[in-house]
Structures are given as C-alpha cells and as structure tokens.
Amino acid sequence: MLLKMPQKLLKTAHYIELGSYHHWPVLIPQRIRLYTYDQIPLFLKENPYITDGYRAHLPSRLCLKSVFILSNETVNIWSHLLGFLLFFSLGVNDLSSVLPSSGANREDYVIYAIGLFCFQVCMLCSVGYHLFSCHRSEKTCRRWLALDYAGISVGILGCYVPGIFYAFYCNAFWRQVYLLTVLSLILAVFCAQVHPDYLSNDWRRIRMAIFFCVAGVSVIPACHWVWLNGGFTSDVVQVRHQCSGYSSILCQSHIDLDRSVEPPGFPASGGGDVPDRWIGLPLLRHQNS
Image (cartoon, rainbow, N blue to C red):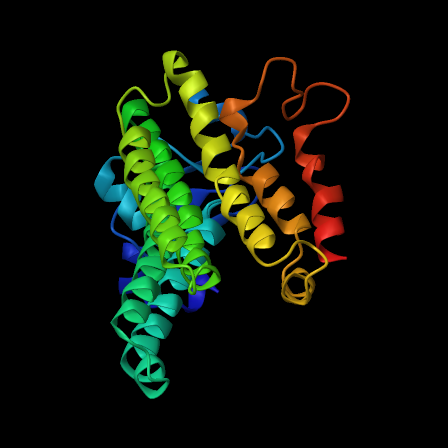
C-alpha cells in the first residue's frame, strides 16, 4: 500500500508503534509514538488489561493532533465528540422547530436548555480528558481528570432538572424547592471538583460525599412524588414504574460512584476475589430485564 502512495505524501508520513503490532502511517507533521503499558508513566497506569496503544509524553499541541491517530483512546475521544455534535444539532433543531410547533412556553425552553447544556458540558469535558490524558505533565493530566469528573456530575444532575420540573408541574412550591436544590448542587459540585486539591488524599471523604450526593439526590424527590400521588398502588405511579423502573435509580447510583472513592477493603481491579469490573453486571442485567 505504501509503495502506491505518491512520493510527496510518503515524505510527510510518519510512523507510530502500536505495542507489539505493526507500524501505522500517520499523515501528521510530527512523530507521535504509542507505548505499551510497561513503558508509560506511573500516573497513566490505570488498567493493566489494556496493554498497548498508549499516548504519552506529549505537549498540548501534539495532544490535539493525536486525535487523528489510532490509539486506545480513539473510540473514547470520537464517541464523545461525535455525540456532542449530534446532540447539539438535535438540540438546536428542537429549540428552533419542535418546541415552537408544540406550543411550548418560556419555562419549557429554559428547562430544556438547562438539561441539554449540562449534558453537552459532560460530553466536552470527557473529550478534553481523553484527549489530554497523555500530557507530559502529571498535573495537567490530573486537572483534566478532575474536570471530567465535574462534567459527569453536571451531566447527571442536569438530567434531574427536566424530570423534577414536569413531575412537580402541578405543585409549584416543591417544584421550585427541588429545582433550586439541584441547580445549586450543580454549581457547588462543579466548583468543588475543579478545585486543585480535589484529587488529593485530604479530599477523599469529600469526594465520596460528592458522588453519593450526586447519585442519591434524585431519590428524595422521587419518593416524595410517589407519596404525593398516592403511593405505589396509584395508577399514575404504576404507569411511571413500567416506563422507567425504580431499579434504574439503584443501578445509576452504583455506576456513578467512581473507583477513586472506593472504601477501604473494596476490591479494586486486579485485586481481591471479585474485581470491581464485574460488580455492575448483575445490576445492569436486572435493569435491562
């Protein structure tokens, strides 16, 4: 294949090492090498089961250019980036066409925009982390990791906003209470997670509290809504149960807890009798059932 390429193009093609695999041509003006797990810095060694395809020791400029090479972060980067572009275009279409044709009022626009904005922040923060996780500075890498956590928290909390608004649509008082609570929590959690000391050992308990709070804050308005509508035997609650399933709350609460806040004695990946990568499977299977 390379012999059929024009000579001018061959001069601009550089090669990268993909672990024990073959060399791949990359049409970018700088050499970017891929490393094996044993070759990368300690702060990048998160998963020993991913053995090849690591980017490392890159300045910011080459981190940006590495988006066009094949690495073990390619799918992570492009799935979030294309997802952001897709849902951004759908959001613009909904705000400009769907909502006006549905007779939506100003509150509907605001609530929809808040939920969409939080979700887009989540996607962009994840793009940034997966793109700059190979930075030569450990400090920069950890700051992007903290920003990724912040984006995930904002995305989760943002999903609560439309649900609370329409669940308590006929109860203005509790609607305002829960909306103000969630919106305040979004701001507080984001500020806490982008703090320079967020990933330090001194903030371990705070990290645990934040993730429990983000994952569990939806339980209170959900239980309150069930009580206001006559309990689990109510027809309205039964319809809602069939549509969403309360098991999804427990599953989401489990998944949202990050590995960085594991309590003492909890088996991490590669350690203990039951690695944590298997813990979520029964819950996911139960939710899908």
